Image (cartoon, rainbow, N blue to C red):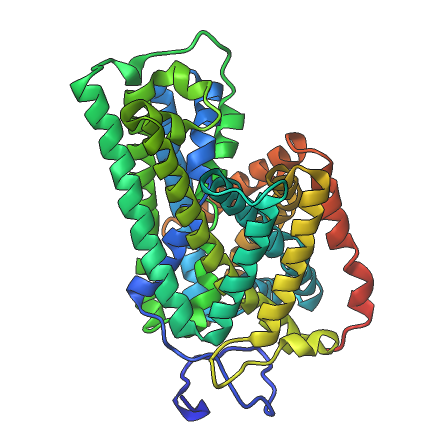
Length: 452
């Protein structure tokens, strides 16, 4: 597709010398598949036990998962206004740049490049490696080997072209949802056939910590905001951006509630809270060891889908960084033959592979990456919420195809939620959190060396 047919504005100050632009190739189903694929990753297979342990009551647990969907929906409505008003491959980077200027936008892109996106890629890759190793181990460093191979192969496939990348995502998302449905049926089927109980109303004799439980719930819902990074490639963006977010969060919320019902019915609140691998314990109870192997394969596939979607969207903000700052101009090239930002993909994968090495050396790969990314993510997420207020006030004459309902209360709730998660991510994480913050601060000196 030539420049003359590209109808989306993709940069605030796009260079006239740029020969290639992002092309409009993604439909509503593609966008939903990407969002669902990113969100339903490793979290739903690890956090339910932690949520159960901190609630101690089945009904409270279910309401918390519903509440997580509501909070995510509120955030999605805010992002729907931003994404439809300012469609851009830089997503949150672009909103922060318009609202706060290029310095904050640069720090966000720097943080996303070195901490948030690459850390998330490494985190997901470690989960994929851990569960794939349960099926076939490659030795002492099996998880790290699988993690590195996953990043290398999926980056290569996405470099080949967006058509290949979105095709992989659609199939992985479909397989993931099918597998989760089977887990739900197994849990309910076991309860009906062998052990009908009052699992939802049962309680643990333990102190509850609803705030910490909500942290784990919202961690599992994280990732829907990645839709902003495909806004410049989405067909009929004014309609499909909103619908893709609404459909995705609705699907995710229903799946999360159903699978937690299944965990409760199949295991009960006590066994669920004491489980270190709740999905595997459920399937082992229903089908024996073959069931545990099956769920390990399912988790590997699920995480692979999330990893692919994160790699696909991650290179977009790096591309925007290269477009706006000459020091990183090598990232701001878009290859016409594949319709992808190849250099941004390559640089992103190199950083992620270095983090795989870091996680291997610390011997706490997944935990290290969670600590590393969380505070930085919620800080900039909060700024994105604030940017909606600033842009509403500053750009009163801008056409807004979608406006968040109940303004200003809806975005206020979103900002308060982000603030709470920022506090929690610093209060409940370890040294890795301060390392991540330190990596962001290392970007400050580059502000004086970059030219617009």
